[in-house]
Image (cartoon, rainbow over all chains, first blue to last red; front, side, top):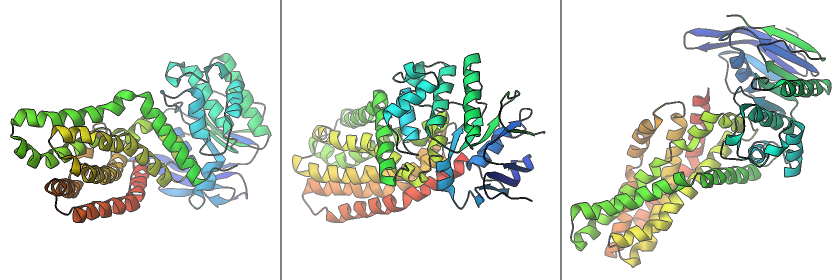
Length: 209
Length: 226
């Protein structure tokens, strides 16, 4: 197999969930400046693949490599380089949007509150910065989660259904942000059910049961 | 610019304290439980003051252990439920640092708070003022040790629906030495005999759990997240 010195590579990953063989030897290769769109019916292991790539789940077989190194051997560096957005926004409802960003982004890199406010502004939720996350709508929470991904300045984005709960303007913004990330040499893995209308290098991986 | 371990620890403790103070009812619950249980004993048993004084170390310690247990269940579970635990795990900081910060913050809002209100309870139970310092020191060491033991149990029971019952079954047997030596230290302080043996033992247990429990709890969290 051709293993590139950079980018993300997943080699023959197998994952079992009890008796179910969820991922059957999945191999992918994503170069800098490329987006991998993972699609497929429900229950085919899209989220599981994302969790394996993030390092949250160790596969029974196979390896995940980032910049040519196994993520097992460079876990802290790898995690510092990635931004993960699960299908739920992962916000503490008792903290404000700004505090949520501060306490998650602040663990990855030093960042000022002004910088976080301007990131919230970019995703269109500047007015929600000082509101507790529990009073935000599902779409606003998704935008705050997107602001967190942006603020992390990560080179690898792992996004699980990033378009869910977004209105038309939000979906357009999401596409713009993804495009810009890929155009500047970032890598993105996006799990989405619908087609992605992006003007950048997109590879598609269809997972079947 | 990357974030150092100490900086990450401080930020995480700040996060936990913020979250605790936004939900004051969770903060007050263990303290009220502690006060009520220790008040019910003398009322229910209708004891003579001398007999109450003999029983008070045991009553105080059992109430302290049970009230510390009340909030242990949510140590990792609330973060796991809303998905923020995954964000913490993927922050690039070691899971051990995350566990240490969360456990220290948990102790500050439960164990340390119990230690602070313990003189009120001790007065009600007839414990002499001379024994307060020993009682508070032993409670501080005991509750800190219990927080570490609880972190392991809380890590193992993250994914369980009724994990608090299993958590109690894991933690309470392990806390038996704390109860024996903690109550002994308070009892000896009341009777005016040397307390150092019991205090040293509690300190040794505290150091032992502080050293090893963070790694065990981090491993438990990692396993249950998978």
